[in-house]
Image (cartoon, rainbow, N blue to C red):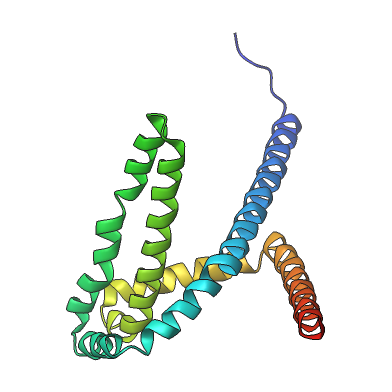
Amino acid sequence: MRANWTRTGTIASVTMKVISLKRILKFFVMVFAVLYFFIDAIFFSILKRAFVRLGRLPISIRIAEWISSLGPYQSLVLFLTPLVILEPVKPVSVYLIATGKMVYGLIVLIVGEILKIALVERLFHATREKLLQISAFAWIYNFLELGLDYVQHLPGWQYVLRHYRTIKASARTFLERLRRRRKHN
């Protein structure tokens, strides 16, 4: 039996589906933005301080010199190595969780992802100029930058960013008051 669709019914149906998809997309963008800022606020601020300290060590200086001596394709191999080594962390953590070892699975996942993100971020900053000399890498990088720029200009992202800055400023003020109280006591 054939459905008896009218042209306006179809357009209204499609319009409702588009509106529903926009709402769903907005929700996921907001969730992603909240998670991104939460992770950034907690982990990256701690990691950045740790990397600054590590960067002052003599061995770190020698490693930085060695990395800067690499060519573009050698830099690419170095950049991809943590991804290749640490990517199996996800299936291992899923296996641990599936076998009832929830805490171990979550620890493996969190530690592995933090290591991967930290290493890849540091290696990218150290090798960025050489990586961008590879045309395929430069194209992918520019494509991802455009996508990130698009997401960052979405209203949901902007909304979360405004509230994130307010919360961060309030937290700084609160911590400063606590420090002053400790000094006076």
